[in-house]
Image 1 (tube, rainbow over the protein chains, first blue to last red):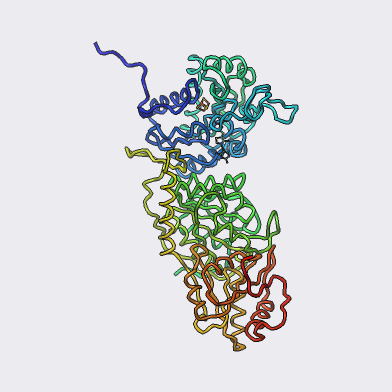
Image 2 (cartoon, rainbow over the protein chains, first blue to last red):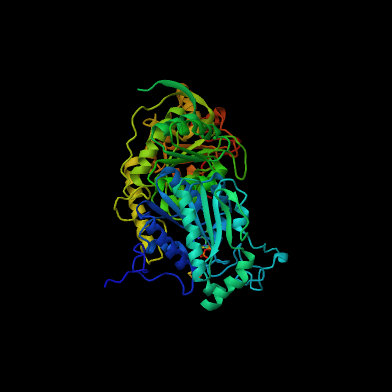
Length: 255
Length: 369
Ligand SMILES: Cc1ncc(C[n+]2csc(CCOP(=O)(O)OP(=O)(O)O)c2C)c(N)n1
Ligand code: SF4
C-alpha cells in the first residue's frame, strides 16, 4: 500500500542547510510561506522581497525571484515592482529593525496608499543580524547590547512600538493581524492569517500585513526552549495576538 | 521630425522621458524641478503608466529600484537636497546593476540653501555621492533642446550598461523656456531576462541583489563594473569644442555657465581676442584627453563654474603641461557675469597678468591647495 505523504520539505526550499540559528523563528515563518505559495501555485509569479536583517539570506535557498533592497526600504521597492508589474505576487518580508525603525516612513506610506502587496513582519524584539542591539520593539526591561541594563523609557530609550496598533487607523490597510510561531497551534494560526493576507492581494483589495512574534535565542542569550517561553510570557502580553483589520474594517484583537 | 514647441526645461525633460518609454516615474516635490513632477502627474496616468508622489526622495529612489528590478524604464527627479537623500538608492541601483534615469536640477547649497541655480553638486554627481566605488553616466545639458535629447539618450545608455544615468541641470536649465523639437522615434528597450516579476513560465528564479557574504564575490562584481566603466568611457564621451584650434585662451564650462561663456567668447572674438570653449557634455566620463590635447597648443585655461571650484579639479587632472589654469566661480546660487569673465580674459591676454584682479571668486594661476 502506498503511504500518503502529509509533510515534508517544500520544493521551493533548496536542500541546503538553513542559515538560521537553532530555535530561530525565521525558518518556521519561511516554511509556512513556502507551503502557502505552493498551495496557491504562486511560485511562478511571486517576487520575494528580502529585507536587510538575518532573513536577507533567504535568497540563498528560496526557489523564487528575489529582490533585496536597502535597509527598511522594502515597502518602497515592493511598491515599484507591484506598480510596474501588477501581475506579480509581491511578498515583502521585514524584521523589526527594518520595518519599525529605519523604515517606518516607507511602511506607513505603502500601507496608507493601500499598495496591493503582502508584508510579513517578523518581530523578534531585537536586531538579530548585527548582534543583538535594542530594537524599537524591544520590551521594557529587556537587555540588549545597546541597553545592557534593560530598556528604560525614563532614560530616553523609547517604548516598545506596536506596529499593528499603529497601522490599524490607516484606510489603505485591508488586512492586519498579529500571530506568533512559538507553538504548533500558533503556527497553524499564523498560516491561516497569512492565507487571508494572500487572499487580499490576490483579489487586489489593498495592503495586507501579518506581524509574527518570533524568537531570537542567540541574541536574547537564552536556550531555544526558554526563548519560546519568553515569547509566551513576555512578548504576547505586550503585543496582543489576533486580527486588527479584516476586509478594511478595524476589529479588536481577541474580541 | 516633430513639431517645434516652446517649453520649460523641466517639462521638456518630462516629455522626452515619456517619449523614451519611461513606464514608472516616482518623485517628491522640490523647487526648482516642480514642473517636472507636475507634468508627470498629468501625463503618466493619462498614458496608463505609473506615477507616484512618494513620501520622500528616499522612497522615490527605492520605488525606482523596484520598478527597474521588474524590468521597466523608470525615473525620478529632484533638486540638490533631494539628491542627497537619493544617494543610498543610487548606490544600490549600481550594486544591483539596475538601469534608471535620475534628474538633478541643482540649487544653491549646502543645507537647504536657496532655489537659485548652482553647479555645486558636481562632486556628488561625478565622484560617487553614495557609498562604494562607482560612477554614473552624467549628462550636463546647456539648452532645453539638449536637455530633451540627452533625456532620450539616457534611457538607452542606462539600459545598455545596466547602470543609472544622471542628468545634471540647474535652476536656469529647468525653468527657462526655449523652443524644442521632441523626438518622435519609438523607444526600443532591450530585453531584460534578468528582471524579477511577471509570469516566469518555467525560467529559473532571478535575483536582484547587491550583497554577498562569500569571499571575493563583491570584489569580482566591482571588477565587472570597472570593465563596464571602461566601455562607457570609450563609447559615451561627449564634448563640444568651439574655436579651440587657434585659441590663446580656452574657457572650460558646462551647462548654464557654458552659455555665458559662449557669449563671452563671441564678444572676445569680436574684439580680436582668440578665445575658445571646451564644453563637457558628459561630466562623467570627463573629456580629459580633449583638454590635454588642447593644452598642447593653448597656453591659458579659464574654468568657470557656479561653485567654489569643483570641475576645475578634473581639468587640472587632464594634465595641462605648461598651460596656466585660472578660475572664476560663484557659489550658493550666484551666477557668473559676462563682464567679470571678460575682465579676467583682458587681464590674462591683454595685460599679460600685470596688476591685480579683485573680482571675487577669481583665482589666477589656480593650484590644488
Ligand atoms: C543603512 C543601514 N544601516 C544599518 C545597517 C546594519 N543592519 C543590518 S541588519 C540590521 C538590523 C536587522 O534587525 P531586524 O530588522 O530586526 O532583523 P533580524 O536580523 O532581527 O531578523 C542593521 C541595523 C545596514 N545594513 N544598513
Ligand atoms: S540571530 Fe536571531 S534572528 Fe538571526 S538567525 Fe539567529 S536566532 Fe534568528
